[in-house]
Image (cartoon, rainbow, N blue to C red; front, side):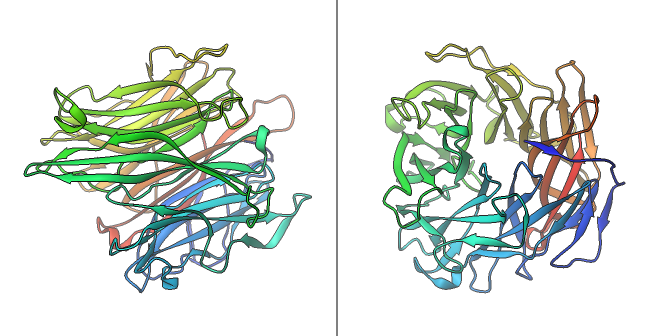
Length: 478
């Protein structure tokens, strides 16, 4: 992302008081307003070419379910920003699928600076099929002028346009991830998500199977048009997600992440685990991150498989989880960065997996052997929840490191010059958690180099109690 902007940085500080509209500068941290007195978490963010940010998250609702809300952060220029009042996107009180809960959204920016948010709406009792919904948030007019209040394009208040109405969330939780389809489709995006197709319980094993779906959304069309949606298409099936009863998974499963490579092909990463004898498999348990590449929607054979990369756990004491992908069309290299947690089992400390996959130019698929990217693990600490973000200037990975009485956010930043840095980021809370990152480039006047900044959101509190978590945001220079 390239943004015309000027001047200085502010020292770190938490901006007070908490209110619907807050004005702050680069280097400051704000706690975002929320529509609930309960916990707010699972935040994700996107940035547009103006430097605006939209953060979507879930939060507790009085019904016992979750709501999905969003906060627009407008770039006012001169490294100054303003938050909007939170916007209700997914309202569980509507009871559209039974005992509604709207959870785990994702957000992406389109070329015109608007933002798209998708979220699943599940029946907490698992009696009805789940559905995937989407809304578009417009923060600037066609001339790039900020609107007084963000405009929400949605089916009705608290209810998004229907993307898929026949999904089983199962144990995976659907876990949608969005990608803008690039210059080929300036108002198009694709969402990749998970549908559970089978669950088999044995005395000491759980066998699960999923399919990975993809639906294209064309916001240049009316939401009531038959060509507003294309799909769903099945990218992969069946995907095994097995485990031993004594070693369960916590949280969502499969957890797909999607980006475009330099040829606008879709690159999708997800978790996979297989335990014998499921699907006829014979051998030791296999836990890995799969990275699949598919032809772009504009190709002659859309979504045709190109190639696949498998990143297995190096040892049986660690299980790869929660992949995060990033790519950049500004770095003169058709490469994708991938980070993932190596969940410690049998008392082992958790670690970070962080690699670069370089694809071979010229068509036909293929890639070089994945290379280790820069991360320094402290053998006395546990690291987890990594999130990667690249542009043409830097590659970065942010993650959480656990200390005896606190957590720290860490940032790994690598530059083409070969300079690598691993730093701790100051936070106003003791236990930050689950960072999400986007990188923007502020174009400075004169001959000096462009400056890279990270838009960072995370959740947490001064206690380890998730029921007290709130959402925090900061812009930091890298």
